[in-house]
Image 1 (tube, one colour):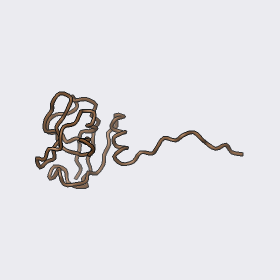
Image 2 (tube, helix red, strand yellow; image 1 turned 135 degrees about the vertical axis):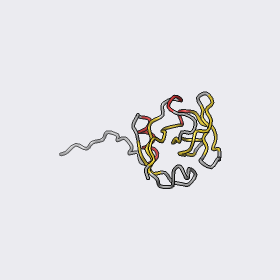
Image 3 (tube, helix red, strand yellow; image 1 turned 120 degrees about the vertical axis):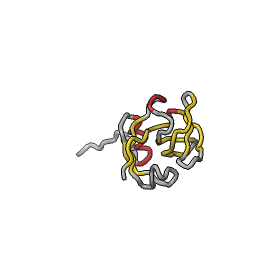
Image 4 (tube, one colour; image 1 turned 135 degrees about the horizontal axis):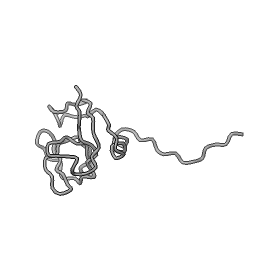
Length: 113
């Protein structure tokens, strides 16, 4: 009789959770962005490649980053830096708010046409 594997299995991560986990592990990831808040810099469904962000030294003003502000996730711009926090805004001037650097997961390094 074959013995069943009863060890707990790690959950399979998909979508945003998988991208965040991979970026936190130091991997570069690519995915398609939805929405029009970053036009014309990034168009809806345009593929972007992100490098991991692990410290404030990995970013600068004007960088497009994948981050969490409050309970929402965005690929938006860094429009101000204050200590270990960054201000996140879309490409049309709307400010989403301030977030800590640990909520900035990746920086856009490539935008494909």
